[in-house]
Length: 156
Image (cartoon, rainbow, N blue to C red; front, side, top):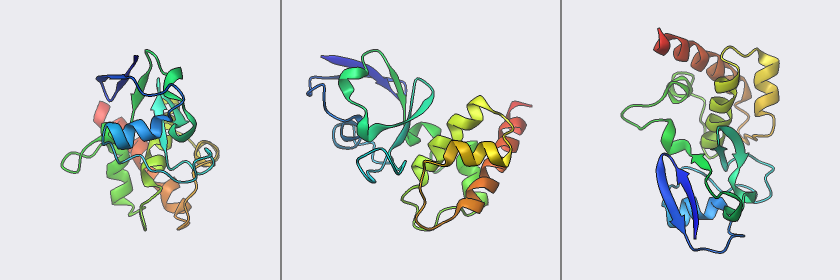
């Protein structure tokens, strides 16, 4: 039995240890916000937080997660109460097709947890592995700056 936490809830599974976390999230736990993009950890659509660090869930084997804490896009907020990064994404109308956006948001949230007021170079570096086929990179960068502002406002 493999045990780890997802969005604060304890998960126990007897699936094969080589099973990618992405499939457990989507197929077993029905957390479909994390997307399958490329399957080789190159596009970032499947980005989640593993113990607070942005990681690609498509290449993460559940056998390596014993005792770990995983957070998905579902932990960032809800449609009724979006978190600060989601609010900034909405305000800046980042999404076009939207497919990559959960991974983009998770990468941005991890960056902002480490660097509360990132500059453009830090944003570009942190999100460089998250691809957006629609090319909304200028909006993504603007939304990360806005999310940083919102997070500062939320703590005041």
